[in-house]
Length: 80
Image (cartoon, rainbow, N blue to C red; front, side, top):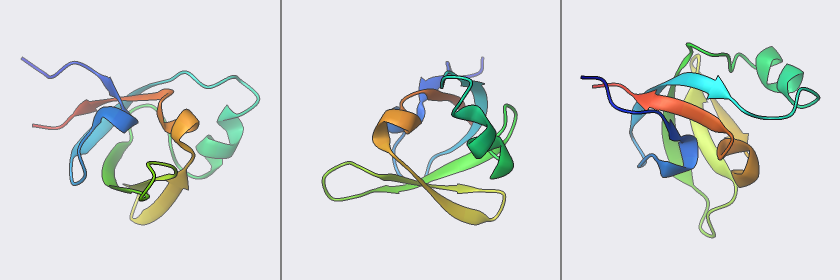
């Protein structure tokens, strides 16, 4: 049985996951889509900054840094 989707901020560093939902307001979605972050995309949580914000993920072969409040709105299902 596949794992339940979680916000990116709930994953542990080194965990790979597949994006299942992006709950950001429509005005903020195009920027992420241009950077390759789409539903169905595989991502890996790389690390959290020392104070937890920002969050670094690996997507489509490059590292992308997101604000914590943005990462909380991106839900992904961990890959087994």
